[in-house]
Length: 224
Image (cartoon, rainbow, N blue to C red; front, side, top):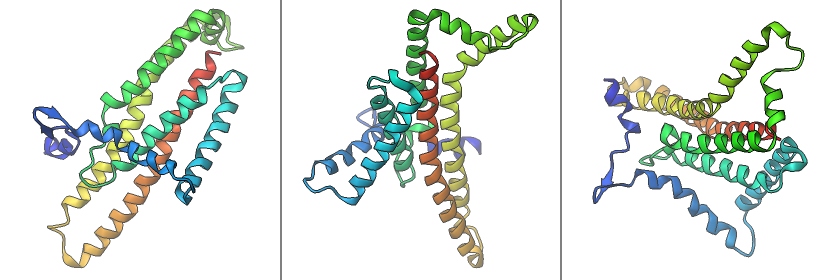
């Protein structure tokens, strides 16, 4: 039963022995030509406003040492948002519901931050291992705790995004499977619940991409 339930997340579709599910990751590129029109549309103006607000917020979190880092973070937000949103459409594979995708995003970013911090700001990184005001007796334990918390950061980033995307899709799948067997008088309740869940999942898609980008920003600001 569980294998059939989670089979909706199985990237098994293939053509010429090549899996084509992961090509849905690049479906967001279809929205780029919209920005090439001479007169911007309302969609483009809203998107530009969102990107500007994110740029200002990330710049504030990073401080004066951003130097183009906000471009990477805004692009990361856009990539995750497009994948989360397009995954709500029927027959579109949700790549962000797999640790293969989320760890690919989180692990290189975390590793680059750690390497940059330990190579260029070694004393600053050592100071972070012992919070200010820690008693002398607790310092060895705090070093262990802070080291472990730093090492599990990419895992928590990846699992948070994956778990939130899987949970909503599983609820939609479970309710949708009850459609053919449910009483016709209760069918309207099922449809209403599906619509409400779809609205909730749309909000989760935006929130989780924002949380991923903001946490990445905070992790990068710590090494400076």
